[in-house]
Length: 150
Image (tube, rainbow, N blue to C red):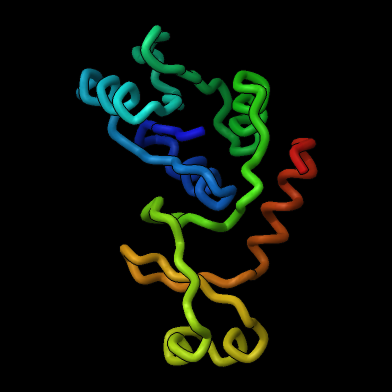
């Protein structure tokens, strides 16, 4: 499942990416461009904008809640959706799939403690950010458990 979130849903887009989903963002204006992208890329539109109505060409979820957990719970209900098995596989900023990187090549780019304690690293080929299993992994897992999505 691929998502197209309107620009006010940046936090939700980031969390969907951490969960392993392709979660692109686009401004709601002009509507024609949003509709065209959703249809051509086969994406579910997720928005809080009331002007974006239902479509027969793509799915639209109009979120009612403002809290992250409420929004995720609504997506679960409306889409009969479960989290992706491949979590932490996309850049949470760029939405680009991450690539594995050899530990020896990133020593100068991560804190010394992280380098000593972690063995697996990935990088975003677009923004060059380095990722490793940190406390956010536990936070995501706890969120899944609270929502009954583990």
